[in-house]
Image 1 (cartoon, one colour):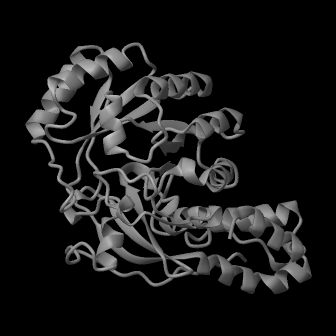
Image 2: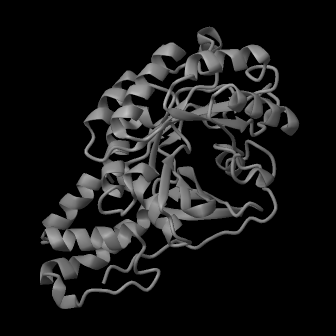
Image 3: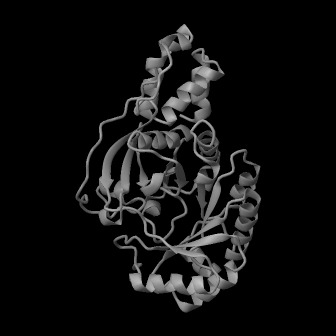
Length: 352
């Protein structure tokens, strides 16, 4: 179900604008779960009130938490089951963040990512994206939503933008706290400029070498790193939010002195921050994670050379939970389950 279909379903049941907003706000913010004040039954038209149990069941059926994988850093990796039996991953991050998935699988085929190994299986619908947020909020507060889970958001642009518009209004997430992450696509850059709710932008860069980027991201749009950064920088300045440049550190591949020189040449003077993310090891990938001291030296060198740089770590690494790995384990593709796994019952949404 997409959000526009959900809205049409509510209107067909007799909902006016205030009724529709109340129902969608209660669902997306998990207000009933946390004891939020419910409107009296008389608030709703009789026809809508009669339909609410069926609508509640539809919302509860969009997605459910299949298993929970808590990390020592306070994160929780959630394997989320969808109505058709497919699964995606969401990650509750420390300090109110949530990472959501926009596709089941991915077509980009990044060589260092588990998600793309099976290719693209299907798009995640906009209501299913918001359902991931609702499920997470039933567990704890969520004030920041990043589209950095399974899938490439620019390949599911209509659904992702519909979800972003919804979360930035009814969903009560600040626009700068909505982060659209992409490998780069001209259609996405054009669309972002036209959005009413303008999210922050994260660009998966990984290298400044065009030939190496084509090998690492074989089915990404064929834009050079220079063109990507120019497009990202233009949007960042227009939106008012610095661009987050993502750089997955692969030992001996993109952590060399020449890579540092390339970063300085490409990003100097740009309004943004470079996030260095040590590779989350995937068995059989052919890539290695650099030693921590090497990562720290690279970050320090870049900072000293005028590039605002942060060394980040993927949440939940102690449960071996990089994007796609939980789903692969559930399908029997990536070894045994990690310790500390709990299974959650399906959520129920009470709207009145």
